[in-house]
Image (cartoon, rainbow over all chains, first blue to last red; front, side):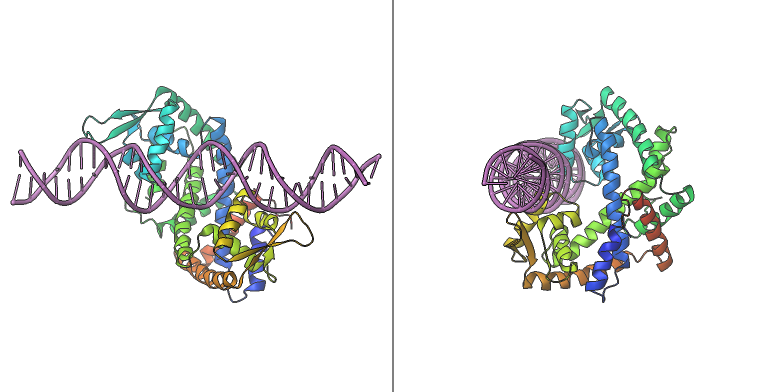
Length: 164
Length: 164
DNA sequence: TCGACTTATTTTGACATCAAGATAAATGAG
DNA sequence: CTCATTTATCTTGATGTCAAAATAAGTCGA
């Protein structure tokens, strides 16, 4: 009997015509996401970052040398709007973690590159982040994790067509 | 090969020391949550609501007669701060969907009650919402949905101790 | 080469949220 | 009864986000 069960029990009493089983699953997903988000934020904060800045630095880091992408590339990887990305880059630039270089091949654009400080910071932060994710998955056995991942992938494929 | 797989492939190439399997699961959960949120927002918007206002109205509706709770009760059910709840109630009150009545038993407090318009609106909206949730779960078989729900509940219990 | 169109990025204005502080009323120890 | 404490709610100021408009530069057909 968790909080989601209590909510479903209220609906069943008040609106017995509704089948709320799926609402329960989606509600659990949302609460889990909130809990995981809080857990991850703690690690980001310990490195002077938040989820937004971690996201951008990690995208640049895992892209490989020369650790530089255009704002448009970053938008494509991160699922935020261009205005949001401008704001994120501004903050990271002020913090000295990325640099904006004019793109020599396209006068309209820039290339956002990790600075040395940015590289060192994200490399340390991502190690701590991965450890933290392991800890947060502890309630599930390895087999349960595989099953869960498979189910989430199948469900997600219904929304984001695979493409590749 | 979905977008999450592409991200994991980049990490494996750049940081082969990291075990990123759990990152994949958590990433899928986040993307799924984003997709489900967008899908639900469409239904809320069709009823002149957003996720925040739906959340408050639904909490009042499923509480049963007299469809009235204090702001503190609403905060406890919805996982937002008191300041956020003040703002949500303000908007719903302006829209004529809830009423603030002084609590006769506690001069510090109020009771937030559904108006007739609020009751009619949330009753229609929640029916459409539940149908929409069924449609969004379509990629999974009934048995897969049960398995997924069980796994999410077990995982969530690691964060939100059951209590009841 | 010109003008229309497209693409890349930033700016603007509106929201929703949170943390922390402010206000007001209830409570309870003495 | 009184005052310090607690509880209920609202206010304030900062952040992060989005949609849409603005700016600036590349592209391409005629």
